[in-house]
Length: 51
Image 1 (cartoon, rainbow, N blue to C red):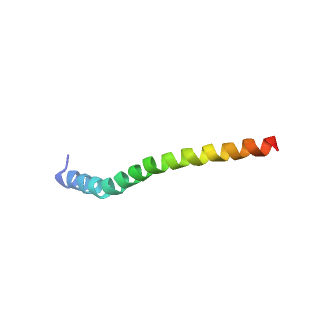
Image 2 (image 1 turned 30 degrees about the vertical axis):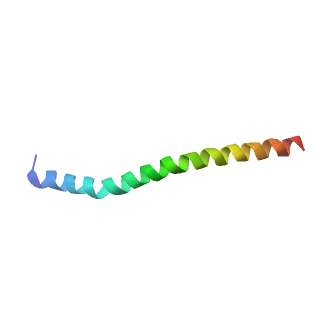
Image 3 (image 1 turned 90 degrees about the vertical axis):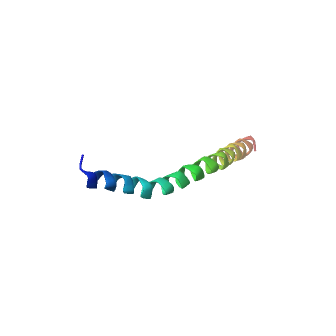
């Protein structure tokens, strides 16, 4: 492979690596919150159905 191509690929990976890492971290943190939110919404729906 061409040396310039390899350097460009490494540069792009380093540029995209940090934002991708932050995105994965935030998604895993928010996943717990989303699960809690879904559970709460289900409970509210069930309570409304009983009334």
